[in-house]
Structure formats: structure tokens, C-alpha cells
Image (cartoon, rainbow, N blue to C red):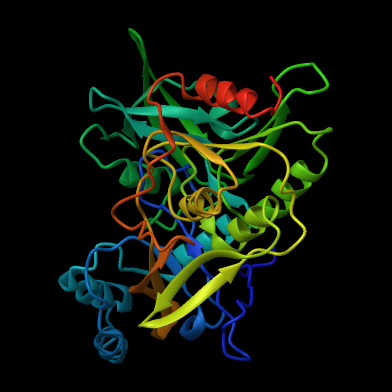
Length: 395
């Protein structure tokens, strides 16, 4: 692993300053176990990522003072700084220790330590396995999507937030790492049993491509699960190598974000330059632009849902506002404010809200989300394929 976040230089950044924006939903239902994306800043004072917050920016100096005082007294820097962030009311402000931030860094590289499953909250309030990563510890143990998670190391999880369940599976806060064990209590129908899983270093497959039929004109489905390093280039390559005039169905459902630089690269696959988004950092307005040379002729339909967040919303908004795609599905999550990480004594990192981003048309996504051109709550992919076929994108 490279151990550093993807960096890019927006056109309006001052010379010598690098900005890394990551749009992630680390605490969202359905987060991949062991993969909680954050931006690991080698130079935290000039790094930034986007998350969601409904409050004014936190006073960074107050947090730094609390951290310095804790370090001088031999107390926990993370706890002291975290208390200040908690009091501030910044919903998405947080403090991470060095190990946690290293894990986030690795997640942005497309790898994570975990057991290889995704979790979600069911309508009945249970915690259910939503996806099992092929070849991972959970898969080898025979765990399937739909199995209910009942206990972790003997502790009930039914009343815990999904994000907390994910953290327990990862071993956050316990010092657990690759090779450590977690005992998982499961239920499938009337059967209840326990599996002991060994955490492993796993690689995520964030972009998958397949044809929607066997005809030469069949559309191409590009599913993007998250914007980790290299995801944008994979999208561009998939578009470049799509046969003939085949349409593209870009599936961003349950995409909880990642690096915005990768979302901009993905946008460049469909745009011939131009604006992708604007954003502000402590009142200073900046902008993100697509690279020229994208495919502007193929029909494109973007499929979204309530799990489409952050960088995925930025991409959706850009293609929708620029008239490059028809969007189909249910309204997106609404996550689009900017946080800037700062490194604290002892290696901890505080992330604090500093601004928001907008679509090319000036829409504020944070707290509002994006409403698709065609709102569909059931059989969304089938409807999206029909729309794409009507646009001349194959069938």
C-alpha cells in the first residue's frame, strides 16, 4: 500500500497547496465491514474531505488547545479533543487515533482489515448481512446475505447502531488487527449458530462491468460501489472500451462515497471538460473541473437510491446538471459538507466541518440530496434499462 491519499490540484488552489477531498459515509447503514473511508492527510492543515453537518464550523484552536493540555498531563488526546467536538454539535466532526486513521488510509487504497461482509438494518430492526465478499472469512465460513447478526463476542447487537456493529467486527478500539478473532452469533430461519472468524486484510472490488445482453448493441452496466483509489480510471476505461454506441447504465446505488478526485475522474469519462462542482472552505470559493476528451455521445442513465452519498452525489449532480445523463431511482442521501482534518499531538486526527459543495447548477446537496429525473422505488434497474433503451442505448 502506498499509505497516502490521492491528491489533486484544482485550478483555483494557491500554488503549492494540495487538497484532498473525500466524500464518505463511514457511519452509514450498509458500510462495508472494516472499510470506513476517511482522508488520511500527510499534511492535515491543507487537506480536506466532504461529509455532512448541519452546524457552524468548530473552533479548531479550542480542540488543539484541549489536545495539547491532555498531552501535557499524560491523558488521552483523542478523548479530550473528542469531548470538545461532541460539545460543539458538529454532527460529523470526530477525532481518530493514529491506528484508526491508518485504517481509513488503507480503505481509500481499496483494502481493509475485516471479515468480509456488509451489514444493514432491516425493517424489523434486526442487523442483517447485506453482502458477503467472495473469498473472505465470512464467505469461507458459509455466511450468506440475509443471515441475521445476533451477537459479537457474546454481546447482543440488535439494539446497537449498524456503524457500531461494523466497528466491533473490525475490532476498533480493542487493538484487534489482521489475524485476530471475533465470535459471531448468527441466525438463518430457525437455525442459530456461532462462527469464529479470523480478521484478514481484504481488497475491495469497487468497480464491476457487465453487458446487459448478448446483442452487439447491448448496454453496459458499470457498478461503482465506492470511490477508492483508481475507481475513476476504471470507469473511464469501461466507457472507453464499451462496444459501438452501446449505452451506459451507471449504477451508484449504495455508493457511500470515497475520494472526490476519483469522482471527478469518473465524471471526465462522460464530459468534455467543464465544471463538475464548486465548494467553499471557510468562505473561500473553489471549483472542480472535468478533464477534456470524455465520451459525450453515448446515452447514459445514472441509477441512484437513498444509499447514494457524498462523492457519488457529486458525480450524479454533475451529470444531471450538465444534461449528460438521465437519473433514475429514489432520492439520494444528501451528504455534502466539507471537513478539514488536523493532526493533533500523539498522531490523533480531528476532522472539523469547514464548508459545503454545490452542483454545477448551484444546488446545495447537503441535507437535501438529489431528486432523480424519474423517481422509482421498485424495480428501479428494470426501469432504468427501459429508459436507456428509449434513449437509443441498446437493450
